[in-house]
Amino acid sequence: MRAIRVGLIGDYNSSVKAHRAIPIALGMAGEAAGCEVEAVWLPTETLVPGVERELEALDGLWCVPASPYVSMEGALRGIRFARETGKLFLGTCGGFQHTLIEYARNVLGLVDADHAESNPGTTFPLISPLACALRDQSGTISLKEGTHIRDIYGEGEVVEEYNCSFGLAPNYRSLLDGEPLVITGEDTEGEVRVIELLGHPFFIATLFQPERRALKGEAHPLVNAYVQAIVEASVVTQPA
Image (cartoon, rainbow, N blue to C red; front, side):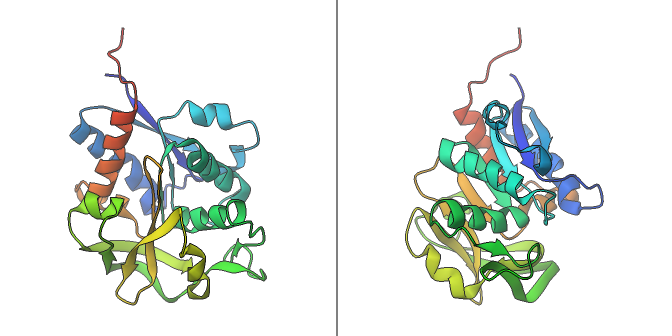
């Protein structure tokens, strides 16, 4: 069985827990799915126009934590490619934040939507500081019935780990009242923590970091489901 290849949209830094954890989490998910998973780092500055052929050759894309990215435009280009082509996609933490920006700019036409961390002077801080920073903290999340994320967990309430200080600004929440990008998970205060794209084979983004469990030797149902979906969508052949 050939290895499946997952492109990691982000700028690798060995000091970032999530960056160390994600290849391990993918490896554990691959074991559960009966295949090898190769993590391919995609530095954001390399995601320039014309990179689409390289992205098409990958089996999935994951926009990873630790923004600001070297190139926001590169990260948004990778996310947009996954959204428009049906490439199986996962976004966590910074990936969640930039998934919202990509959608606002390229689907809703809100070209000034921005991130208050990378652009503090923005007049459209779609992503703004959280009321309380979630650095190395855990929290309870309610998952909406009839959603992909709820089906993956098999339960309506979960506890997950965060390491972030920014999220969707509450005053812009109404932008997600329509479709196809919808809110599917909220914390105990009703703040947005999970989004997914309806009609897409697999397109989920979370403010929390499911990959962190791998550093404790624990597989995560969301990562496992992501890899299983890639396996099922891929033409997996025995090596010659």
